[in-house]
Length: 280
Image 1 (cartoon, rainbow, N blue to C red):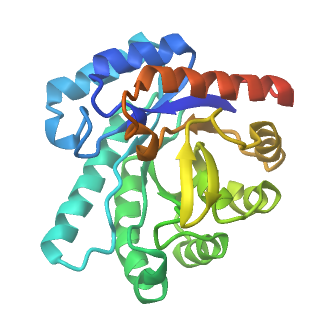
Image 2: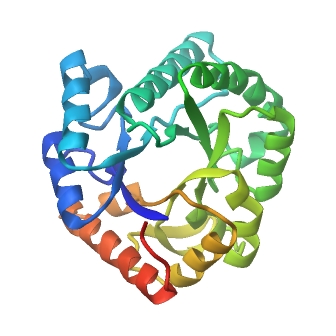
């Protein structure tokens, strides 16, 4: 396993400052957010900007672990759905363009909706996910759907059902264990259930239980990263462990994205050392 960082935690930092800083801290990979509020929003990415990002990745010896573009796949308005699916396809194109040969090209997104939408919208989600997966497969990429406590895909049993129905080689899971922790699902249960589907991860720290919860930066809370890493290793996961700084943290007065990136790295680095696991 290796340690990555998501620019989700750096929405306003120009990418030519973010990537060198992430590499200098010690991260081996980076997930790039192309959501609308970010400096690297899809709408802002000219061909020149896309080429610059690929150059910056190579120059700083960073692997693009994923391109994240959260967009609902169950929008009822046809125009909204068309726009969402177009942006997800563009994010897939970027993942294929920025990912180093030999590494999986991954686009991450949630399905959208709320937990209570599951029964009514699960078949619609599959209907829209499958063409997107075909598009990804044509480009040698993967669609990684995130399990999220506030979305319709919020429980391991729903993930099992989804993968049983989909059976598509380009559909995988983005496993954010923080969402399982706030649901009261322990590491020993969530990791064996979800790691086999996973191609990408997010990790945060957290306290409380859904819906009364607070997401924190790795190292700020009680989460046992050593136990988590040992469980992921035992489950056979070989990908990146990618730190993500929540919007909840970003809303704090005086939020410093570079400090929180450093805290994330050293928390994970120390956990790998204590767990006795190599950072490949």
